[in-house]
Length: 184
Image (cartoon, rainbow, N blue to C red; front, side, top):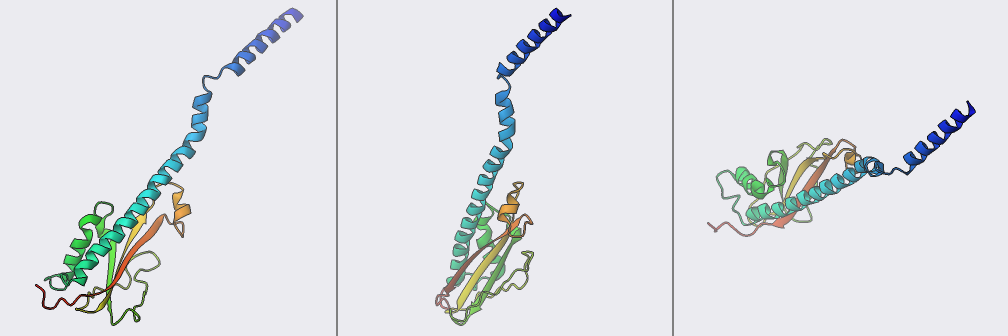
């Protein structure tokens, strides 16, 4: 019986040695361990980049739409609010749904009297919005907001202030209207 035990021990040692030296599945196992982290980082980078792209496009479109107020084109249109929204959403639709954009336009007597009261509630919904593009020479503040929903899992915990998975992106422009009464 001892001879059989020795042979079994040698056979077990050879099998264990071959098993330990076999590296064919190590790469697959390492990939399985590293892939979730790799994909999370990849999607986090892509979504963060898209978030900044959206914010940049919003800033540009606010400047473009504000120009139509500054020159009087909005004030002279039959439906000023619809015209402003059309100009604003013309290129904004390429990165976000314009139905979810909230805009607030207020006129002030001067830049010193300008106030930046919150026009959204704590959930990012429209609360106290106005549409008053003013007349020639008035100081105007144009603000827009968009509630961006983060789709990458776990990224909301890092980017969202309250962990809800949404970020409110805002863009604004302050200017003085041109003397446009005689224009047409």
